[in-house]
Length: 499
Image (cartoon, rainbow, N blue to C red; front, top):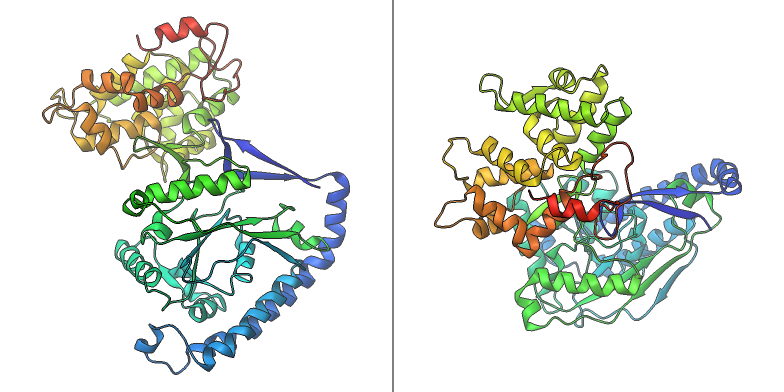
C-alpha cells in the first residue's frame, strides 16, 4: 500500500489542500511499466465511451421548449435514456479500473432525504458516486456547460448551474436549489459535494451552506478510496478499490433549520467522525486556502513565514532582516514615496541581489509585481520578533489612520487586519463592533479587544507569534498542537510579548 504524506498546516490540523503521494521503488517501477500500457489504453477507451454518451445525452432534451426543459423529464426520455446513460457511465469507470464499487448502508428515498451530501471530494473521479445514487442531479459551475460532452451530460442531468463570479447567478442558483429540495418529490434527488472544492481527504473543510438552506433532511454519503493515488497511478493499477457509504438520514432541529451554517457544521462533524478525520474551519477564498476565526481569515501557508525563509536562504540573518524592516518602515512613513513598491524597489529595500526572490515575495502578497510594503513589514515584523505586539499594533494603526484622527473606520480596520495577517479581510464587522465605542475605534480599544477577548486573543497568540523567541532565523522550532512556538525562554517571552 502506498504512503500518503500531507504537509502540515501551521496549526493543529493537517493541510487538506496539499498532498504528496510517496511510492516505494517497486511501486514506481510497476507504475511506469503498467502505466505506459494501461493509462493510454484506459483513457482512450473511456473517452470513446463519453463520445458515445454525447448523442444520447443531447437526445434527452431535444425538441423541448424552454418551459418543458424547466420541468423534470418524464416519459420515454426518462425510462429509456436514463438506463442507457447509467450503463455507459458504469462502463467508463470500469475501464478506468473501478471494477467494483462497494456500497454500504441504505440509500434513502426521495421523500426521506431530498439531498445527498457527499464528502470528501478529492478529484473528478468522485463522480462515480453518481452510479449508486442513480445519476442524482448535481450543482455545477456554469463554465462547465460549454465543455464538449460534459456540457451535454450536465444538460441531461438537468443540473443547477452557477457562476461563482456572478452574485446574481449565485442568488438564482440558491433559489433553484431551494425550490427543488422543497418540491415534495416533484424534482428528483439532488447530490452535492458539501466542501465545494477538492481536498486530499486528510480533513473535512467547512461545508458550504447550499445543501442546508432549505432546512430539509439530508443523507450524508461517505466516499472512500483505500488506494489514494493520482490519476496516472490510479489508472496504472489493475483495479482500484472504492466504497460509497450511506449514513442514516440527518433530520435538522428547529435551531438548525433556522441556521443553515450551524446545520452544515453539525453534519460536517458527524461525517468527519465517521471518516476518522478532523472537521476544520478551513475554506477556499479566491483560490487561497484559509482558516477562519471570529470573522477573520488566515492563509494556511503564511506569506510571512515563506518570506522569512526566502530571506534566510539568501543569506540574511536576524540583524539584516531587522535592518531591512527599518528601511521598509521608513519608506512606508515617507509621504513622498508612499507604501507601494515594485519588485525592483523591494529588492533594494531588502538588500537582495536576486530579483526573482523579490518577485516571489511580491507574489505572496499581491497578484502582480507591485506590493504594499505595510503588509510585508507588519507580517514579517510580527513573526521575526523584532518588535513587541504593542509596538507593532501602534505602528500599524498609525500607518492606516490616514487622516490622523486617532480612530479607524470600518474600511481602515479591514485594511489594517489584512496587513497584520497577510491576507485581505472582508468580514471584520464583528471585530469593529467589539472594538468601537460610540462609533470610534481607537488604538487603545483595539489593543484591549485583541489581547483580552477570547476569540481575538487566539488570533494574536496563534497567528502573530514569532517563529522563535530570540534567534528567529537560526533554528526554526516545530509548532505545537495550538500553533504556539515553544523554546527554553518561553515563560520570559510570554511575559514580554505584549509590552
